[in-house]
Amino acid sequence: MRTLTYVQAIREAHAQLLARDPRVFVIGQGLWSPWYAGGSMQGLETEFGRDRLLDSPVSENATTGLAIGAAISGMHPIVFHPRMDFMLLAVDPVVNQAANWSYIFGGRTKAPVVIRAVVNRGGEQGAQHAQALQAMFMHVPGLKVVMPATPHDAKGLLIAAVNDGGPVLYIDDRWLYNEAGEVPEDFYSVPIGEAARRRSGRDLTIVATSVMVKECLRAAESLAERGIECEVIDLRSIKPWDERCVIESASKTGRLLVADAAWRTCGVAAEIAATVAEKAFCRLRGPIVRVTLPDAPAPSSRSLEQAYFIDATYVISAAESMLGAREE
Image (cartoon, rainbow, N blue to C red; front, top):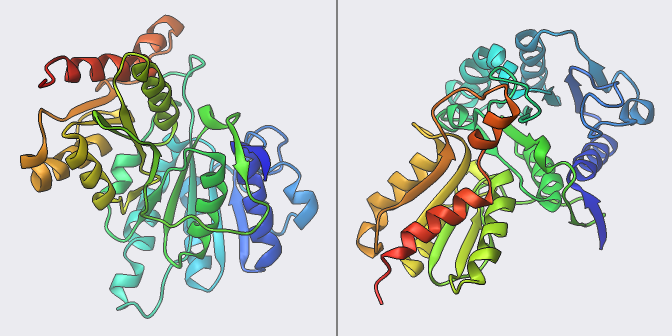
């Protein structure tokens, strides 16, 4: 088994999809740039031609609408949004058209489009270039949302998204691009809606998304040195999300911490916490805790960024507070 970085795995998934299926094409900003897509599209326009990799003008709504129209007509497009913030300009075609299309026509036709949105943060980019907006799209019926946290899943979930047959939002985080891991050379899929147990434990269940999976595993290692064994669940998909896996784990440990690097109110962590409280309250031994960003825009100051963005230290502090009142 080879080792690839997260960004190399995304590139390989694109290459294999383009090679196997002539219906697949990619459209978005900066596809021909050696740096704009962070290496995830590097050289693909040379390998497959610029008629399969369409470097679009800065018009998120038009680009996404074009791709959805192509999907309805039988193509399998991937739309690339290099900053998730500006994907908000494409909400109308994504929510009103792609997500509703199959339902409106009684399942007789679908919109097999993948909308790839990249989360950027840090680097003093400020409030308009550092937003993780996954909860907005998790809310929409008819739209699936995946958030890979490992190189293996970055490749497998992109392939699964293209082959799903419906609209899928694929969210990758630039803070994961240099993470390395084993990635098969094969053309494979990771099931959408199936979580992964990254670490087993008895004292506390930690459920995490995307970049927070890495931080939660770091936290779990540190906590294990202090005798606290955490079970870490990587959701991988947030719409649908694996309720059974999360509830089983929370029922076993009796405690649940949810970590999502996005805003707190009405967020992914809130939905998971509410569902577990609704369906497994009697099996919990204490309150559910959320580790999220504060309900404030991202700052532009480096010192404020260090306080704003969450990492393993926040998870450790929350876990220690939860276990401080542990029944002996």
